[in-house]
Length: 205
Image (tube, rainbow, N blue to C red; front, side, top):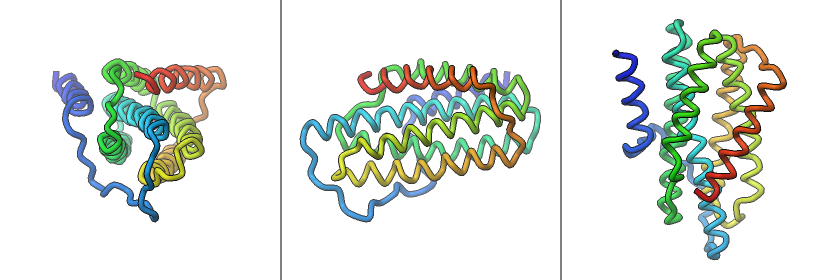
């Protein structure tokens, strides 16, 4: 019962409570320039996709923390979740600044990611950590693609995405150091396909 209460509380906080960051939002070296209407729409769509990714990250790490029997692994997952909570707050702040809304399907994304996190955790800590490595690598590549698509004038969004990439790279390295095992190629392919569906949908909804 305690586990269920904790899981429900985490979901409610992620989906409906204002996200609170422990670190300040990254500040760009150059102030943002004016954006045209099409540039603003594209920046908002990309940051909405990134916000969805952080909703999913909360679900994944919370589920994996609940599934592991290792106190050390639980602490590692919870620490990563806190850094991802910073990302959640930053991306939501940027959406507000761009006068855009988050994805309407966030509860669905959260539920799906939570189920995947539980499944990965049930396979054991090394597989669960391998899931972290593959997820973070795919997210890093996805963020790198966003840097090429964000308007050069949108230095605010670019600063956030750059810091997120650095954090995701660190999470993957930590998971590898903790004993992650590589996931089979078919599993990696399925993860990429699922991510493609999510990002394409979240770009609009």
